Amino acid sequence: MADNLETSAVSARAPVVLQVLPALNTGGVERGTVDIAEAIVAAGGRALVASRGGRMAHDLQRVGAEHVELPLQSKNPIIMHANIDALAALIGAEGVDIVHARSRAPAWSAYYACRRMKARFVTTFHGTYNFRTPIKKFYNSVMTKGDRVIAISRFIADHIERHYKVEKRRIRVIHRGADLRYFDPRIVPAARVIKLATDWRLPDDVPVVMLPGRLTRWKGQALLIDALSRLDNPNVRCLIVGEDRSGGGYRRELERRVTAKGLENVVHFVGDCTDMPAAYMLADVVVSASTDPEAFGRVMVEAQAMGKPIVAAGHGASRELVIPDQTGWLFQPGDADSLSIALDHALSLETGQRETLADAAIRNVQDNFSTELMCVKTLDVYRELLSEMAVEQARAMA
Image: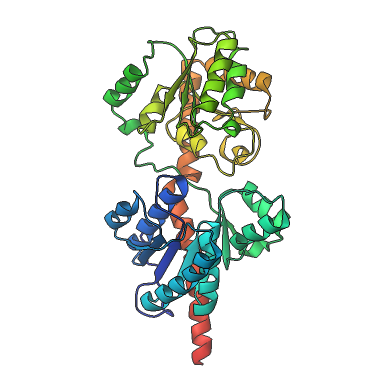
């Protein structure tokens, strides 16, 4: 990751990469933006980020990147048009070589700014997006207009090719990654794990099933509750970990479901957690029960990095992340019986089997799904474009 971004045919100055996104509040896109900015700086480049700002803006300063505040969160056509002028001016003033767009509204402004200023344009396609109407599909299509289009999974790459007819030569599959500086069971002290167990009132020696993810229907909390009612083990505990953004309505619905199934002593809603490495350490099995296909599935990677078995719905990117019978199990999406059977498999592992699975899960993430690998592959995309620019410059001078 420390290889220099420059090529001999490009000007002697450090290459400048500008990432654009709506805001810098907590989230996977925002975290990835900071990670890539840090990698750019470490590789000898200059990292700029334009957004509305937010709580993670100070993280950019910490890694040596620079933030420019622009109202890129807006979908107002007038503001988006003004953002074209602002981004074009920024590209010209700072000598930006590559603009990397991570969201649709800022991508439209960045696309036209790059065309005006002849900068290279990269997009990261983060999800399937809603494209039920032609207008919505056209709005989404800006994420396919990059000189390179980064798909966060093969599932997303297939989606792009199938629905947007993008040439394979422009698509690069770069999985998102877990930061192994934090998600490593060897570096999580027992005190952090004990604190969470105490806060969550977990009894000793009780198997723990955990579903991390915000409280929203498609994350499958209701499906997991149904599956738990089919388990033979009455002593299991289930932790539903995640922020409730529904105003409480969906949580109350889930709590009624828990009561109807007689699972009041099994299922616990513990809210948001700021120490997920320690939380994973408490789990005997981690569940991803999404009823819609996951574009990537950060939970599945983080849990494996911590050596935990994964039980996941067998659609979307899950099939790329989980190695069946080696790092976890895939169940039939939306099927509570299938999920219950997979949970039984995970909970019945003997000590030796659990250790073998943990080793395989950790290796899987280290080899394929680390933040470092994500950064290396993204910088490789930038190098491709810088090399193309160098060739074009050489031809123009010939």
